[in-house]
Image (tube, rainbow, N blue to C red; front, side):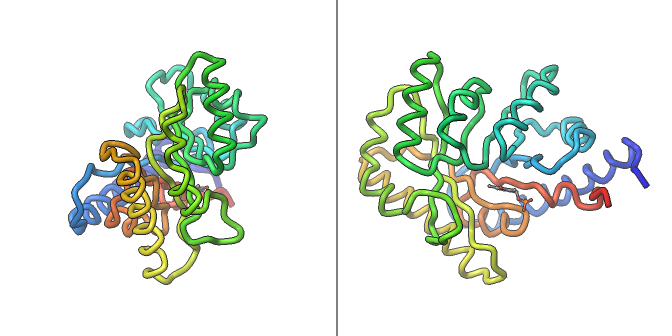
Length: 241
Ligand SMILES: *Cc1c(COP(=O)(O)O)cnc(C)c1O
């Protein structure tokens, strides 16, 4: 049985309302200062009809995992010139040029080498790259990201970049029901950012903290997230089985 576009819109709308309410409630529990978090709708598994429903509801920040799918969808949705594309998945060195040409905000820089390559290519393209450095806070074997110590010890290298804005940090919490582990991961990212600011002696840098997904965004908001990346919660009830 397939759903009509009106049914899809209704389901997505209800899901979005629920997520916004949960975001608000988490923000009220938060005791830290800082801006309200921005929702990035992760569309990596979404069909175009589902994305249309999100756009109708005013979503403008869309997250994709794969550069190729992101570029294709950017083309398909070219009529919307106000969309902001977020690359949240692993970025291979040979895809850097392609991704910079899309103008996407890249959440997943996992090494200094990749960051320097981005800066080089952004220079060649006479553009400015906007990125986040992904940190493997929990030190999980299977997760991508820079080690916290590597980032902190070398953070002065951020000053060597000429064509790149490192807007902040990103992390993923371990997949667990243990709230303490999840909270410590998000808190760890925030504290790492705070330490880097001290070392750099500049309080106004690394403002963005991209943390929180469908299963853990409320904890992430309590811990100071500025960008939450939500996929499955927005599309509940639409799975085409
Ligand atoms: C898929 C993905 C998300 C969204 O996950 P959901 O659990 O579907 O909300 C967020 N961040 C990254 C890096 C992802 O790969």
